[in-house]
Image (cartoon, rainbow, N blue to C red; front, side):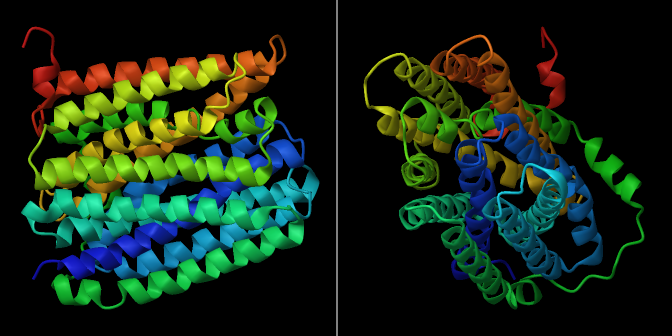
Length: 427
């Protein structure tokens, strides 16, 4: 049996829950630490980078879920760990101790838990989706589940933004408790029984972890796509930790307004993903190569506009960020479609391991990009005014997106990824 559309939607609910919890730490808590607690952007950037770098364990989670044949427990257990970490991180912010002494130590532990939970749950979920879907449904399934995740992020950001004003620590903790408890309960209910009904029971494998990872890394397509993911996702995440502080410090947005700005960005991503999903899967318009490249180049142009707005008196930040989200969504869903197709190619029974390798590449890029963006802003503000400092970082991100778009045009052939050998100059 393969996943039905209703089961795919249920898995999308789990992806929605992951996004809703993670956005608390990468968006709301980041803003509160940088503006309300007046901590260096580099500190919050380092914590978010830590949660990303911890996700280098994703290949291990993927391999273990492949070998043990029980992805459900990794999904539910990972969500519980993710929510525990988010609650601890929020508590340290609410107590205004996140940047010093024992509060900082607990914050570090919290972000490690966030990384472990997101890695275990997210990798196992995508592996279940890739291994349980019929081949012709994989691209559409990726579109549905990721649209649901972006929808969850957008709705959560907007709802938190509205509920958080006027800000108080007590209000923050009530919101976090509702989100975390709701996410854990919904995940357990949504995933229940799906794996047992779709996938046959498998005996645990005795293949060593190192050997299993080496077998997947030996595949040329896996290595090529890993490189593309790293470059494009570094560009994607460079602005993640500085966009809301940019809105607060340069445009005087309130905490609620800046959180709603993040909601507008993710709303734009939702529309971009939906448009590409319908165009590619439904109307057969355009190729993977075209949509990935267009998304990267459009993102670069949008970032150039956002950088320029800091030098003017124009109040167009929200529309510009929404358009950025639109092009981000176009790029992301086309890339995810390729990922889902490639996960089922090569050595059988290794969907989780491949998803883990690509997830680790994304996580490293997220950590490096997020931290680099925050650190560059801090350094540039020592010698330049705030608007110029942010603008230069956004310009650097635009340049990276431009390079990623050119790479996509070079390595992607229609709807498929070219083998690594075709990347050699002259071939």
